[in-house]
Structure formats: structure tokens, C-alpha cells
Image 1 (cartoon, rainbow, N blue to C red):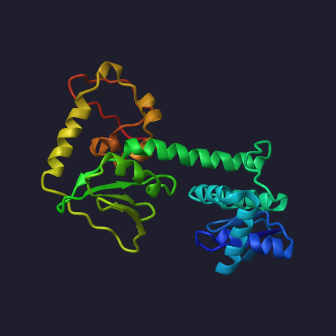
Image 2: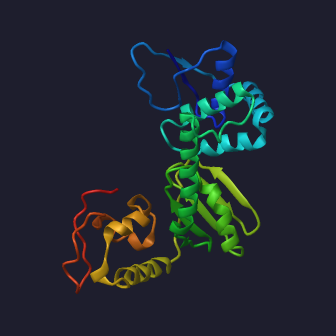
Image 3: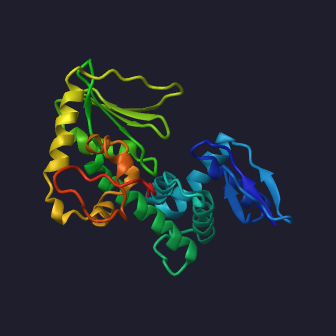
Length: 272
């Protein structure tokens, strides 16, 4: 048995496909991060060679069209640990059959591929409602998010339509990727250094005002933390201004409200 270890380049997986077809061998796994092989598994490091990757991409386009290649890159945005192996298997089968097989859901690899694609699309949809902007000293609106998948440039067009006359920055702090809108164009870049943001002097006051409204607007007798967590998972709340004061004091399985005269803040036992 053999497993391929690939580099972190975006299209490094195509070099693994080139190696597999050239040597007529099929790896049991393809990975770029942590991997624990069995005692009888040989790990081969696949060097990134741009020409090899380009040849494979041309072959994929020839077999399934540009839509197949685009779908492969779309699923590569996933943070799932098995993403590389799943994308490799799907691309390998499509190249072998010389056609697009991604709609064959009876195949376990194609089904897993579709599930990854669905998870990315779902997160793109819900993240448009979870973004909170803060006004900086320069007047640019800044938002920091930590999505599960690499989607910051996918949600930016939504805010370009909603805020066509405003300049804004969407910052994926997990990957340190920023998408900026200058009033005309969207620009995505990856920063190698920490990003420092200076907020406008009135921003904190507006955030405190919004937190107060959020805390007291609901009907306390009908407070349902479990349902709230289903619609808004806790992992997204760390970047939302209304939860900055309550994130560390609210859980999905909290007991019912015991103090209707003030804010109820149970102890934290889980961060979902």
C-alpha cells in the first residue's frame, strides 16, 4: 500500500494524479497535513511541478469540461481532513472513464464529494447573515470571520451588491485571507503578517447599544437556547458583536431562565 503526501499549493493534488497515472499505481490516501499510516503503508512525497499539474487540468477539461475542473476547485475549499483523498478519487475516476461522473451518487466517493460541496454551499449561504461590520478610523468597514471552509471570496459579492457605495474588508482570521472592496473592485489576498485594525471612537458605543438591545429584546419566558444554537452555531458567535459579552456565558443545553429581572448567564461547559 502507498499514500501520497502533497504540498500546500492549491493545485498540488493534480501532481498526485499525474504521478498515479504515470506509474499506474493507486494510493490509498492523499494528504497534505497530518496522517497516520498503517505499518505496511509507504508514504511517498509528491513534489509540486507546475507543468504536470497543468497537463492534468487540461485532461480534466477534455474529459468533463471546465465545469468539472471548477467543481473540483470548489470542493478543495473544504477543511475536511479527507478532502484531498476524496477529490483525488473523484478526479481519478473521471479521468479513467473520460467523462464527468460526479452525478453518480451510488458511488461512495461521488456521494462524499457531493456532501463536501453541499457543506460549502450551505456555509456560504448562512455566513452572509453572520457577518458583522465594524467602522474603522479610516471609514472602511471591517469584518473578521472564522468560517469552517475557505469561502471569504465567495461571500464578498453578496456584500458588494448590498453595500455598493461603501468600502469594506472581509477578513478570514483563521487563514489570514482578506477580500477588500474599494468601491469598484473586489481584491482577495493572503497576508503573511498579523492585521492590525483601529476602530472608530464611536464604534464601541454602538456595539454596546446593540448588545443591550439584543439582550433585552427577546421574551425571556420563551428563551430557547438549544433552538438558537441550531440556527446560529456557537463557533460563529465569537465574531458577532451581540455575543461579545455573552459568548463565554451561554450554552445550548443551558437550563431555563431563573431570573426574569436581569440577564441570565449560565456557566460555560461546551463551545459547540
